[in-house]
Structures are given as C-alpha cells and as structure tokens.
Length: 504
Image (cartoon, rainbow, N blue to C red; front, side):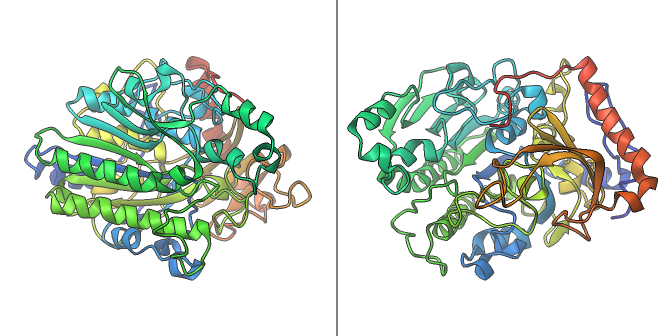
C-alpha cells in the first residue's frame, strides 16, 4: 500500500455517510477509465455463494489442494482482482440485507436468519435494486433469497423486476425429509404431517414486480439437487435476452450450494477428487460461473459487465465433513476471521486491471454505493439514514488498488465485537470456540464472551487469532478507541432497529 491506513486521515462527506480515504490519483484514473466508455452503461453480475469458505477456491490456496479444482473462478481471479480482506457479516441474512442496503445489521434490523416462515424486515429499507431500477436498470434476482418470506420483504417488492428461486435456506426444505438426519420425523407420519403443515413455503417460486409469488415446484431432495442447474439456466436466459435490449442490467445470482446439506446435481456426483458431496458441489458452482461468463462472452456483453464473486459468510463447520475450511479461526456465526472473511473476486475485462491481489478492506455492503456510482446514480443514496458502506469504485477500477475503507466493524448480533484497521484487529467480545462447547467447534455454537481486557491481534502474524498483542502495543490503544467511539456515536442520531434480533 502507498499509504498507512492506521494513521492516514479520512474524509466524511456528510454526517450520514461513513468516513473514507480519498486518493486523488486513483480517483482520477478511475474517472478517466469510466469516461472512456463514452456513456456506455455498466451491467452488473453478483454471484453470491452460500457458506463457501475463503480457502475453497484454488486462487485462495484451495482448489486442487483440497480436492475440488475451481478453474473458472481461478481464471477470473488471474485476469481480474483478488480481494484477500473481503468481509461479510457473520451469517447469511445479515450479509444479504447489508449488501442490499449498504447498512450494518444493527441498522437494517436483520441480525440473524429468519427461519421456518418467520417474517423478514426489508420494509422501510431502500435497496440497491430499487435505486438501480430507478436509474433505468433491469433488475433480476435468481436463487436463494432468505431475507424474509413476508410479502413486503419478497424480491419483487423491494426493487427486482423478476425473481426465480426460493425464499428461505436449503436445509429447511430437505433436512426433515432425509432419514439420515431426521429419522424421528421421516419414520413418523404424525411428525411428517406436522412439518408439512408448518407455515413456510416449501416450493421454489417465481414472481414479477409487484405481483404475488407463484409456486413452481416443491423442493424435495431430488428437486434440490437440480436447483443450481435450473437457476443457472434461468440466469443464462436473462443474459441472452438482455443482449438485445438497450437497458443495462443488474443480475443478483445466489446459489443454493454449498449450504448444508449438499446434494450435488447427478451430473456432478462423485466428480471431485475428494469424492464428497461438498466438494462435488464446489465443482458444480465453478461450472456455473463458467457457464455465466461464457454466456456473457458469446452474447458480446463481457466487456460491459462487472462481475463480483463472493460468499455470504465464512465456512459452516458444524456439520463436518459437509462443510468448508478456512485458514482463519472459527466459522460462520462468529466474528472471528473465519466467520466473516470471505472470497472476493472482481472481474471486468479492460476495466479492472488483471493480476491484482489486494489486502485492502472491502465489505460486501460497499457494493451498494459502488454500483450506484457505476450507474451514475450516486445522488440517489438516501440521506435520511446512516450508510455504513464506502464507495470503492476507485479501488476496483483505479490504478492504485488502495481501499477507500479505513475501518471494518464486527457486530455479533447487538453486541459490538471488534474493529479492524490495517493489520490490526481490536477485539472486545466474541463467540467461544472451545472444543468443550461442541464437537466441531465454531460458528453458531458456543457462547458470547465479553473480555475484561481487550484483545489485539496482528492478522498478518497471527491469522488464527491466538496471541493477543495488547500488552505490547498500548501505543495504538487511543487510535482504536477513537475508531470505535466514532462508530458507536453514529447510533445516537441514527438509532438501531431490531426486526429479527439476537444471534440465534
């Protein structure tokens, strides 16, 4: 990096906006590149995987080495930008809502996943899909939604022209159908009927803007195994259709895999060197990326499309071996690095410089102002609420590759957990991952623990967060406390809200 993020000063453009770094040369380079497009609008493809780990792809050290080659994703990383400090929230629903709104879970109120028909809470929020739609974009959502099944939280009512997918999460559709996991339900007619009558939608659905959802097919285990294939075909059809249109588009493609339990498409069953359903599903997801990119290429839209590939949280470790791995501590559901550091591959041919790898901080919610900038709609960002996201256009497109984000804030439900700046992570609370709490430690198990004395981890020297450096690095204390204080004070003017509260 050309600057030191620990000591460098930020700029706050308005009271409701997160402070950010400004790099004049990088901003100018990005502006020149965008201007050279002569007004041509930017298409956006966001591919959001479910529970894929930071270390799953070959470009992050996984791939062949862990029994599941990912050549398509690796190629995009080589020819684009690899983010090594890309962050989600601790679990899927908070991450998805933060990506959609540019706001932390403490502000949009979805602090954990709604389950089995529980309402969501996007009412009152402004989504990036709404604002892109107002800017003239065609908006398409495909795959997993999981921000609430209630009508006001459904995709077709929060900015998407069309939705084809399911409203909840994989295991809710299948776990109670599988005798290996739920024999006490499968072999009991009474309990089977009880769950069949539970108030949640058991089908994948279709909806168009402002309309009602229509059931497409009940999600049984055989149907689940084919969903990612069907959803990919639907997104390919959308890309092909848009090639003949003048309007730009935003495609939000969310996969079912690799959320447990994994039932790969029959075409991929046993296809991985690992010969395991999780790894077979990674092979399938990589193939899906390849199919989407090939469709962009053949329709002549690849040069006009920003592609962002990521995961909604760190790896899920509690159903091992049907789970991911990570070089970091703990997993999904925690604020240890293993819970929130996710893959981030950025590709835009001719615009994002090839062969870049950056450890600059990037939050998935930063896509909110970044995509609006690329759409020429930055003025549409709401001013009546706090926006935690940072515009990262110059980071991704400019020549300097310096992140515009200084701080990364970690929240564990309604508990402030940690702050990261540069290589340092200053931690006040976390989830326990003691092996006495659970057989496969990490994530949603364990207990929330607040530290009497704060902890400090150097993530370059200690990515497993095992050695607190605080007693030796007290000179940094004031800087960390100022960063936390500044963040927490924003909640005085912009109070938090709770829609789906707690951490489980």
